[in-house]
Length: 128
Image 1 (cartoon, rainbow, N blue to C red):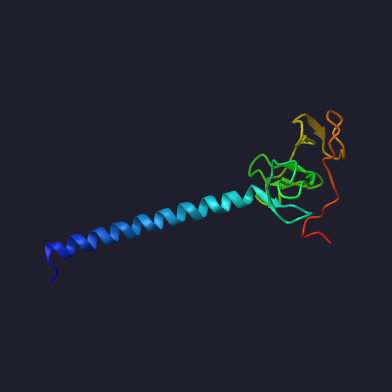
Image 2: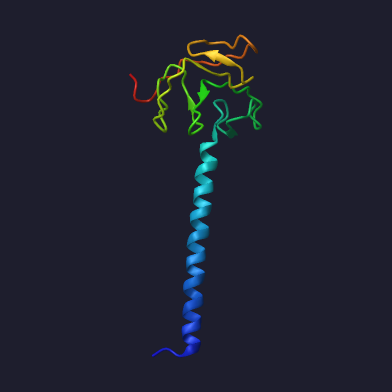
């Protein structure tokens, strides 16, 4: 049988391990969420934020190639009728310009409000 002292040590060890597992799970979740908000600079490969307009490493101008999904915030090619990440089906034919926030038509390539190019011919990986 275990003594009272051994039982306390065992209980403290179990509590410590549970706290450690929870802390790791929270860290992992925040790490994955952080990765969803970044992408690689096409020029130098450095990680840049989805909202960045300039790469902080090489100074390259970063252009958006679509609009943000209102449900999962993934960047979506304007030619898609559903989000490739979460599957949300888009019913509206207008979207927010990722630069100025004004509403633009689905198939437009340049925002008439700010002049920002908001579409580039990027195909979904499943399309051939």
